[in-house]
Length: 139
Image 1 (cartoon, one colour):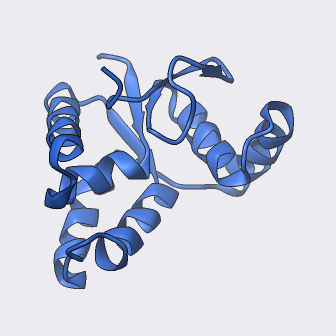
Image 2: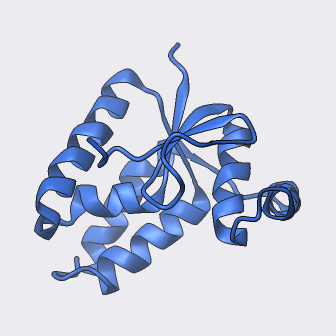
């Protein structure tokens, strides 16, 4: 089995936001590849953020019923955000001077055994807690 790749919310938003042009295409291709390789992983935090953003914050919001279908699609990738993960995030936040929410992404990725986080919210090429950060939109 290939190494797990943790997908941050922004990647999924772009994958479903047709108004995102180039980022939409890149994100769609990335997500499709992760499905084919069976390497995608995310957290319940990401699913929550995805639902809120695609129903309220993109240019052409998606109907809640359609958004629920999208969330259901990604449920096989999801790991629960446990109390232990929250405490680990608080330590990661302090050690790495991240926002708590970014630290929670890193903590969940670590818990899932991910070797990489794909996101545009952290510094491309950086390693946090041993996990490589990749911004797929940088070419």
